[in-house]
Length: 331
Ligand SMILES: [Mn+2]
Image 1 (cartoon, protein in one colour):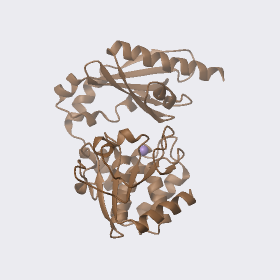
Image 2 (spheres, protein in one colour):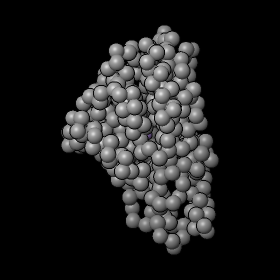
Image 3 (tube, protein in one colour):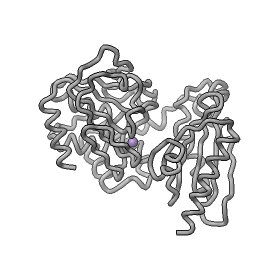
């Protein structure tokens, strides 16, 4: 990691105009990592454009610097370097970025095992719980002072991607870094209140509709071998008056059931197309299943998009998970 950090620090020193980007449908790690690196570079007096194709979800718009994020890169650039954070594929950085002519040196900082290393410099560490951990390492390596605002962004990145330090991805490093960020001025309760206890009521109306679709499929007598599915349709979003990012996290209700090894949420994105989010509890590698369908992610959390009717899509995904479960049993 050190050699690549040296290269990046050289780029930071010699550059003046930077672009920071993260993935479409951004969540806590995307927004937090993006703003963490953005504020760190700005603290050095650099000219930084922070870009997300999609709007910042309401849950995260309190993050310091969020108000400076732009959603179009028309007429922007040329840049000396671009920092892409928390994103496995260039295409997921959004149209504004893929159409950009002069991004400069592309620095890819990510923790998705499925990252295709699209950068000129690639810091891809699947063992990191969040891209925010890698941004933390870089900021430390570059001897940039972690202000309270930078710390808040990185804390939210790590906190949300580890499921509040509950997931298997949370390591001793994640806790150590979070501790340092609290020492730098982060108030954990204030963050929790803003991120987890501030949902619009329409999210719960939507959740009610989604939970009523719960289906549990038994695959064998083994421990945690059930598959639980939930569905969210465009009609449900309309009925609840909810925007699409309000379904984020619903898949965890499926995984959280006793005896369930994999939870799946099917989200209708257009007629005959579904976004599939998968969460596994144990050994089932859902990133491999997602990759098989052209998606990606992590061992215990991954996603993809499939075309077809709900019945078709559901049948294909369940059969792939069942195969994976049976193969895992034999080992
Ligand atoms: Mn992430």
